[in-house]
Image 1 (tube, rainbow, N blue to C red):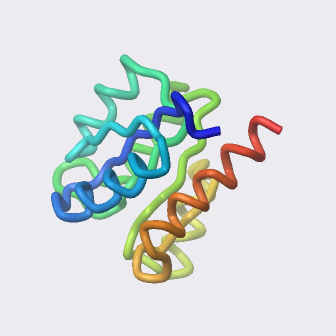
Image 2 (image 1 turned 135 degrees about the horizontal axis):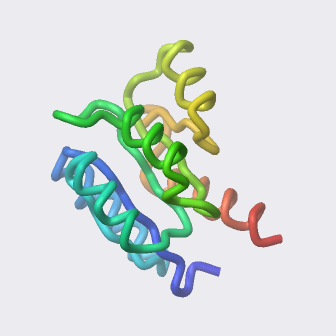
Image 3 (image 1 turned 90 degrees about the horizontal axis):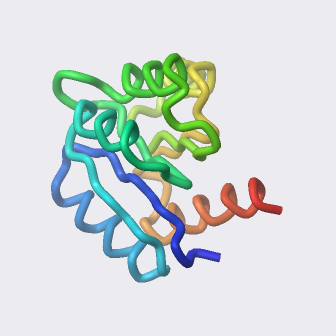
Amino acid sequence: MSDNVKILLVDDDEFLLDMYSLKFKEAGFDIEIAPSGEDALLKIAKNKYDAILLDIIMPALDGFEVLQRIKKDNLAAGSTIIILSNLGQKEDIERGMHLGADDYVIKAHFTPREVVEKVKYHLSKKSG
């Protein structure tokens, strides 16, 4: 299932980008990274992704703003959007889901391998 599945990982933390990239590559996914919200929007405008993993706390353009723009401009139609953040307050989760995220994953509660499994689960729901 993961053959040619394109994932965009948006996070300003280089260590996390490396760690999650490795796990997704090991699982056979085609992964791209965006170290900022601006970079993410540029990539999303040019490419089609099966899933977008979006951090919230980033300089300049935060994940909520990126998600709002994606939805407003219909940039990622058909993409599964999962917020991957350490913000775990009820209000943050509700805001993310209200803005159109398919899921909200709190980094501290899941290992990278579990995050990969969560993405696989969402993609299998869409395809089957």
